[in-house]
Length: 208
Image (cartoon, rainbow, N blue to C red; front, side):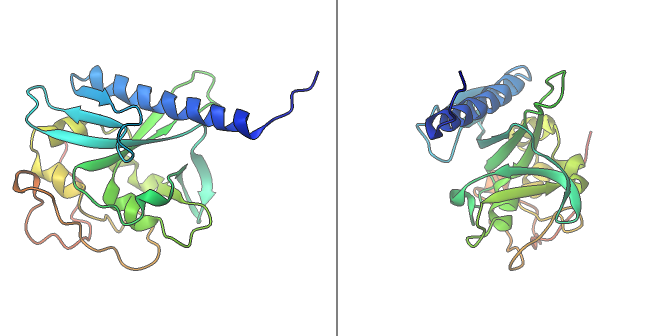
């Protein structure tokens, strides 16, 4: 007998996809010896709280997950795309990042990929007049986002280069829409970006 697809079934599938992304990111952090706590819906804008081994620094992570995020040609660029919702608009905090998960369901090996991006990038890209609130990350930014688990560790260790990455807009790597991006004011002196940050790319963090 044919099964009729209902809204409830679609919603249920979406919840499983979201949960899969959150658990996958938590696992990735834990195996790298980063404390990771799932908020399980208790904090609307935060899915995972990551902390350093001694707990002196923390990072809020919102996870967005897609079954198949890859886009061969979107806005004339190759990249990946996720539904992110309205709440991300103009959201900009140095200690709030997005972990964008591509489950890659078409891959027979089931090998998800994770892209770490600052809330600054997402908040400045998505506009209120978008009929569907989607964030597009061009492949030109792969080197400063794809599988950059090391950025999390370095940020929690107080690395100012990574704090600068979280507060700048790499013009040559991202797609810009609407008004020019404004510089993101860092929260807290311990993670402040270097002086002179104008919101324009200063180059990616150095890689050790």
